[in-house]
Image (cartoon, rainbow, N blue to C red; front, side):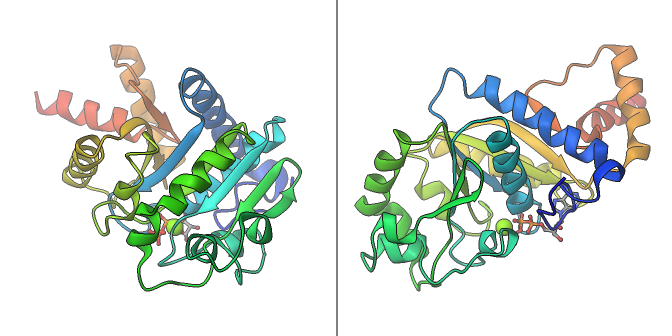
Length: 250
Ligand SMILES: Nc1ncnc2c1ncn2[C@@H]1O[C@H](COP(=O)(O)OP(=O)(O)OP(=O)(O)O)[C@@H](O)[C@H]1O
Ligand SMILES: [Mg+2]
């Protein structure tokens, strides 16, 4: 196992077997979900600190390990992180490409891992939303779509700034990350509504920071025949727990 991320998913071998398996399972779900769609995917969340960057970097690694050619773009130009995850420089990145300070080839960091290329966020610009809405971003997306099997785009939280929404007219697939004991149902609904209103399609959700002890609720739900809908559960069954609570409340 490679030391890879801040949540420790690809580190420490057997101890994190369940976590690695969760990312593999997410990979499989995404492979199916995106099989009949464009292979470009935005990851976002309602609020900050939900686990977006960690999730998408691990999914990118898992996809690359399965043999797909993957490009990860850090489009969070306000709080860039992917260069830290992969221990790379961030002198040239997305902001530099979109401002025409450099070319795609100059900013592209090839093979940060086998099959995985990275465009870091670049120098923090004063106008991230404007850059994302620009023709240069459209051109960049067109260019990379044909080269990669999957393009994953890390973005800031959708209920805080409009950056992710400005992309939805060109990239409709959205993975919505929610964090247990942090993201409220109102946040989740607001984010889903914003995404849908702007032309996006939430193809699934990932629940982060779920503890093993919550698994009992998953078993409880399975016995009662609750479906998992299009949610992807990372390490637990938060959505099922809600259903269990609703059931108990009658
Ligand atoms: N699945 C997870 N389980 C537990 N902790 C996690 C998980 N994913 C990420 N974290 C932790 O949560 C914190 C925030 O993670 P991350 O930076 O990925 O979130 P983010 O949504 O990208 O934040 P931001 O909104 O600032 O961009 C980090 O400390 C990270 O290690
Ligand atoms: Mg982030």
